[in-house]
Length: 68
Image 1 (tube, rainbow, N blue to C red):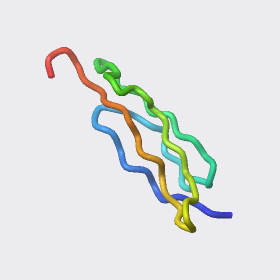
Image 2: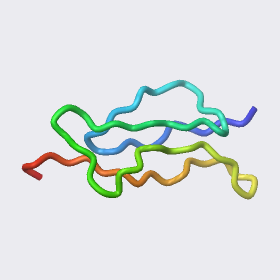
Image 3: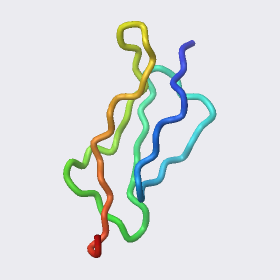
């Protein structure tokens, strides 16, 4: 089975990390306490095989608080 490496993190967002990420697996990011999702707000990434390379899809999410 093919695996993706650990995904890059998002500032002020949390994710429960596993040891292995399978092709086809989807990760859901959520903003930490005190931070809200700002557009764009898709908080998912997928492990995909594209042209023979295994990689994460791009994550379009930003977490911010009112003071930033």
